[in-house]
Image 1 (cartoon, rainbow, N blue to C red):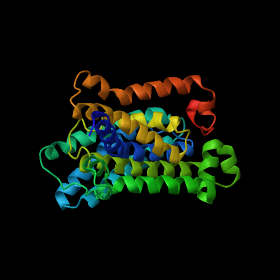
Image 2 (cartoon, rainbow, N blue to C red):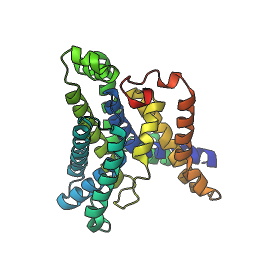
Image 3 (cartoon, rainbow, N blue to C red):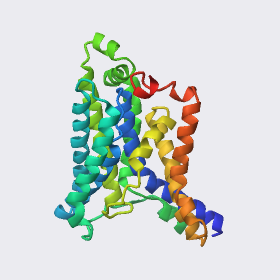
Length: 304
């Protein structure tokens, strides 16, 4: 196969693998922000979910119990964030930054014994064996969590537009006064949304330690939780667009390894910085575009 084809197949497989944690964290942040709250602490949730998932999988021998444990770790941080932000005169951005440090610190402290041991990894589904092309078959080794992420995005998008629950969340995010007039508990909705968002982010963290790269160490996340906030803005707070944006970020993250696979090593570190450069460009573009925040929930602090 020619080098271009090799690069494209490597980027396809890399995009699917790298995008999965982006997808879960972005969906969690999308739900949280739709309720009118920002959670910048999802980086800590991602790391704690990765550690909790890996430790549980190592202790029980079941990677799926590890995924559940990662989600539960996210629930705890999400619930804590929601409860703290419900107090009077508490800034959700400041709380998020504090919980990011807290979650990361807890994960590093309790995760030290699990840096060397090997936990069982999540299996992959071979969707490309029928093609007869080894490179494509390798690229289409899909982790089930990627498929679950797609299903979660579709369910969330449908719920926002077709269910009373979705209407309540959107109304709470757009106008707290209107939600109260409907008899809705604004704090209750936001705590629930933040907790579920934390659960999704924790699952994304478990993917990092149990699938790709598939180990636990203190440099596992590389800022993916923070980049997810930019991803949600880029996706205009739409769950299905979050999937597309996650794949774009995943492809950017896979660019360096794809080039290295064909022997292009000069500037490798620069290509590895592609997701961070993309995040910076998105933030600059969003700050200059009036249309970019038009779809933003009205209660978010960035719209005021």
